[in-house]
Image 1 (cartoon, helix red, strand yellow):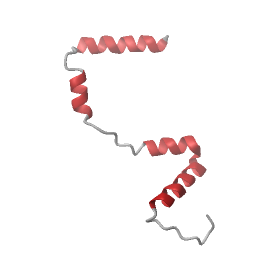
Image 2 (spheres, helix red, strand yellow):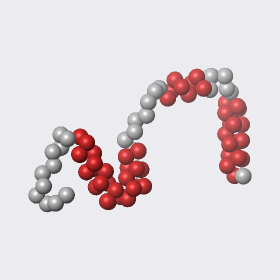
Image 3 (cartoon, helix red, strand yellow):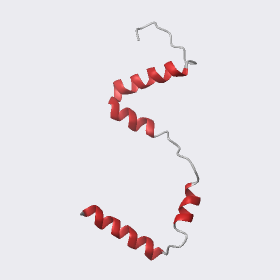
Image 4 (cartoon, helix red, strand yellow):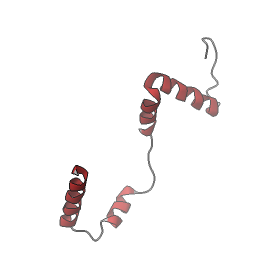
Length: 75
């Protein structure tokens, strides 16, 4: 885009294209992706899902599972 060129900020498709190009130019492709991921709010109700997932688990069950995962990660 050359100097003096006006940008139609209401044209969402063009604005998105120019914005991505600017992010990629300054941050690189990977940096641009990491930047954009900061704005993902997710979906659903994490608290309700977590409570349902762990409804029948004791504290000891959770600790044991965590320790097993840690052991698997270490090899």
